[in-house]
Length: 173
Image (cartoon, rainbow, N blue to C red):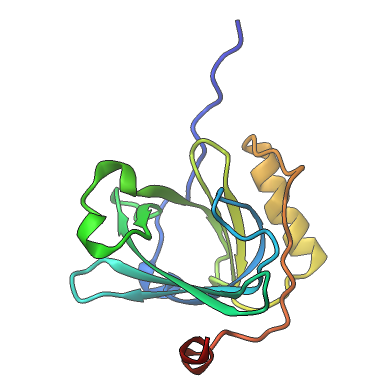
């Protein structure tokens, strides 16, 4: 009989003020609904008036069109490294199944890189403050994920040109 895998570990304390801002997606184990061909993917986190975190995900979709998804994240423990996120419309976010896990497993001391996963090890995101990470940093962070039991065989590395989808581009779409 095999023992169940240990729970994934997260950072001891996430400084939300330092985590806020724009991150570029370097690679991911995607959610079912994520566009595998999307490029120039960014996530911008900002503090909302109610104390929750606004999540503004933007990309260029497989058809070459700008796309955006707005969500809300709420820390679930004192470390603030374990969050619940919902991208459903505001009036449906109260539903218990409407929220997904977003656990910050690792963050650089200077908050320039972060590794985020789900406790079931199905989804993973490597994020950077810049559109590109050195191979050394990328491999180091992905080794951390593999050591925690993530299967990286289907990892997707989107094209990152450094462009961020603007409000104007979204308005034209």
